[in-house]
Length: 59
Image (cartoon, rainbow, N blue to C red):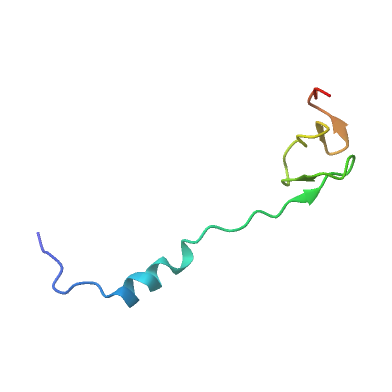
């Protein structure tokens, strides 16, 4: 089995990792209460999803 002939430079290594960064979340406002929620998720504040009440909330 072969071993690498030369050490990978910092530049080459970092170019390869250029696409590995995490993306920031982009919360949207809930249609019912206006609280920021993640898209395609039930609102943690009011329990609504797509105009329907799905989860019970303790208030």
